[in-house]
Length: 53
Image (tube, rainbow, N blue to C red; front, side, top):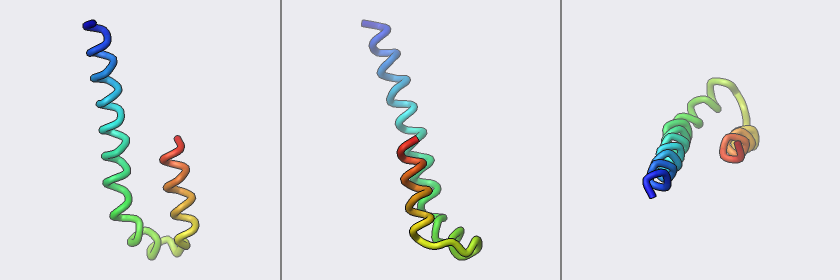
């Protein structure tokens, strides 16, 4: 029972970190698009690759 709670805690911590990373990067993407002169399609592929990984 205790190992299940530890496993669940680690899983939830990893999910929190992943969603925090997405939540911090997505609002900055329009600025990066303008600075790097990339299209929305490229940003979509990058976001999808990050979510898939």
